[in-house]
Length: 178
Image (cartoon, rainbow, N blue to C red; front, side, top):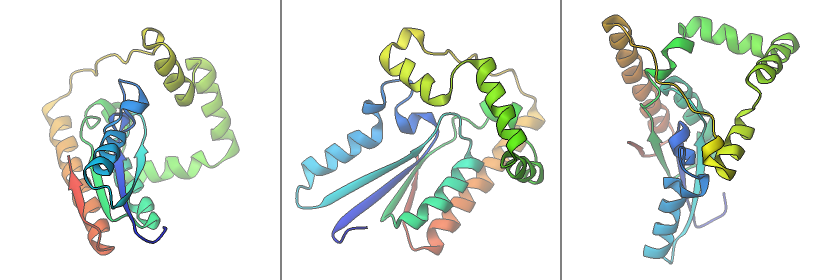
């Protein structure tokens, strides 16, 4: 990091990159412009670590990894994907196994097949959405969830927020949860 730069890291799901609007309308870009206008003597740098459909467990991993970029402040905008992602979430033990398998070529090929079936990569979806919002892929509402699923997701969310807070605290970086 360059001397004199105040680096802000923003982590979260698709809203961090501006979805469902254009990426150039993301709140991080607006924050950066606002800070530069209001505090012209300070060199601000806002790093966006957002990706479509991240749930808080994935955001916690992003925060831990992104701390290596030496942020002065972390803003986490998360929570909107906790219930939407229940269908693709598994126990932490299985999730680690899936990540390990995703490094294997066969699994990458399977991901390519998924790309073929869906027809668009995340980058292509974002480009379509940027160029013509009417052609963007529409996400159906999530199926109803049981009370047990709700309680599990809420407990998991709270644990992930605590994990992010501990990671930031260990590096002496303030963190704001939105």
